[in-house]
Image (cartoon, rainbow, N blue to C red; front, side):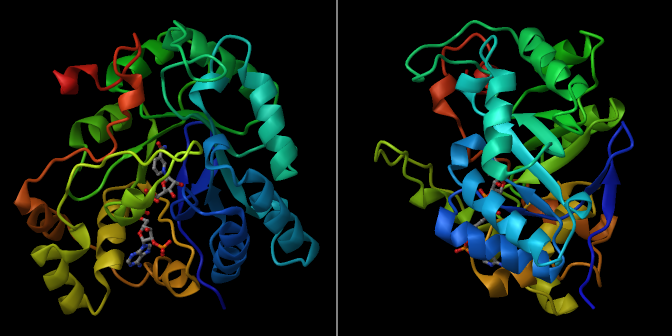
Length: 317
Ligand code: NAP
């Protein structure tokens, strides 16, 4: 029997699996095999985005899995995200319909604003669309039934507060960079206080980020960062519990009440990253793991510098 992930309940009652498969940097060929291996291993949540250029392949994999009766649509939880040029005024609903067409779905389970900063079609210019206006568009697609839940990604607390102040659909989920060396306690506390669930991305420290190449061939610079998979406290707990360092890092986030979406295109790691339900990391062990006190954002999202809705403007000062 395959294991199954526990769930996290969103404020509208929708149940989101606590463990999903990340797909950033997974090519269409890789993602087809990865999604199939993941669903067969018990995963039900798949995290993608228009910007990952793999929605079509994920749609094909899902259709085949449903046709083969491995899983039903209702059992799956599909998250996708609107890129910055898709949150500009009037762009969101057509963008979501386009993603749905690629995914061969009638609805997504969670639709996220990938970033808070709107840009024009070819991303050459900022579009001054305040987050309140962006959120109005999310309220629209939610009420149209195109998404079972809606949320944000890479938004700061003040921006989320402004979305909430519209009094429209609440923000159901916030997906942020969060890992042992960037624990985001303030953001998690803020979200808990507002009944917003949190998804951690980069939970393993995103070791593959350095290989990222933009569609135009440009390879962004990444600041050097220590490997969390080699952290001495992680290694000690892994040895003690007979688990791998990756499993300790993933369970660290889960035991803080967060959803996780580790990415891999290798079947052995996909399985390893789901073998998390036979151990826990206690509050004392979380405190021990956090002793290094490193807090380093890896994803700087420089393209938003100077934008009126740059979420990290204060951190950049
Ligand atoms: P991650 O999940 O922390 O790390 C993925 C990297 O770790 C890949 O290079 C993978 O390589 C490797 N890996 C996977 N399992 C491993 C294991 N058990 N042992 C050792 N190495 C392992 O980083 P991420 O992909 O940056 O983040 C996860 C997901 O979050 C993304 O895929 C995406 O869906 C989402 N995300 C969202 C945003 C956002 O702005 N909202 C930004 C970044 C990511 P292999 O594939 O070669 O196994």
